[in-house]
Amino acid sequence: MHNTVLLEEAIKYLNLKKDSIVVDCTLGYGGHSSLILKNIPDGFLYAFDQDKIAIENADKRLKKIGSNYEIIYTNFENLKKEIKVTPNAILFDLGVSSPQLDEAERGFSFHKDAPLDMRMDLNNPLTAYEIVNNYSYEKLVKIFYKYGEEKYAPSIAKKIIQNRPVKTTLELAEIIKESVPEKYRKKSHPARKVFQAIRIEVNNELGVFEKALTDALDIISVGGRICVITFHSLEDRICKHIFKEVSTLPKELADKPVIPEEFLPKYKVVANIVPKDEEIKENNRARSARMRVIERVR
Ligand SMILES: C[S@@+](CC[C@H](N)C(=O)[O-])C[C@H]1O[C@@H](n2cnc3c(N)ncnc32)[C@H](O)[C@@H]1O
Figure 1 (tube, rainbow, N blue to C red):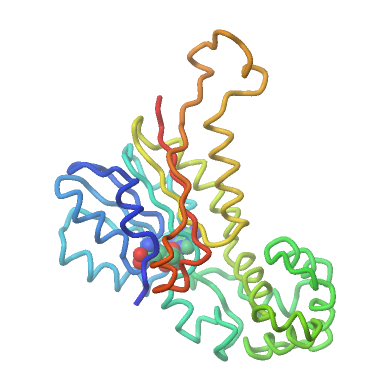
Figure 2 (cartoon, rainbow, N blue to C red):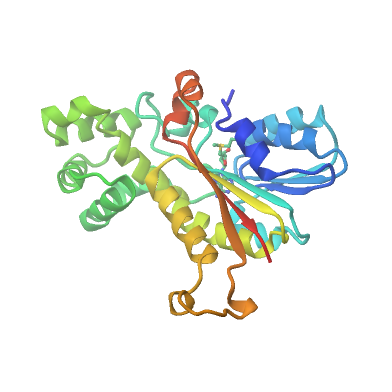
């Protein structure tokens, strides 16, 4: 099962009332959603996920708690299209769930041999195989730099192209290992960053997150909160910039003695926290997590 990260903290900061309308954009195995549902007996939960297997499991779990929820099987980039009410709380717990990583055949893990896939949504036509075997050298280098922050991007891309067709995760992990200097291999697994980059490209993770977060800010109620849990700096940077932009005065107005109300920020940043040491000890996935919270004030 998935070991939910920052569970108590997310529930606390979502500031739930008995009748809150809540959107969980990343249902996963229902860790957060179960506790949300317990806290809103007179409210309603809408939960998104693009992974059918996760939804089936979470649905069984939520059914035991109540019936005041709806699971929406689609990408959370459709948030605004699907949610026609004004939510009081919205949660994003980004990335992949532990079962997605553990199910070897999904191709997310560089430790388990599987065909190159990495799709969260199995209807997505773009797979890791397509990227690894058909992207140009320039395109591979760009995504390894941009989404993996991998400094050996050019040598890795070159070696991948020399070894095409690359069919499985372990073949790819071995090629990456051979493309980087010996001492670099010791730090962390050399395939980690490139696998992250390919996963982000397959699922267009940063693009959809940026759109959905902007839409979430638009639809949240006055007094409502948005909690975002991220697992790497690229996602966190997007969240930090968007939150900063909407919660600060435009530069031109910063030193003016009187500011017309319509120019005052509509949002205030409430929290920026990381998991406690005890949680990190118990759950390795928590080590890179960070939660940012924003509230709509007008
Ligand atoms: C980290 S897990 C969420 C775990 C959940 N909070 C729990 O406690 O069980 C992230 C989930 O979000 C889903 N997901 C990621 N990006 C998505 C997107 N753009 N649209 C819909 N679901 C997405 C994944 O399929 C995965 O099940």
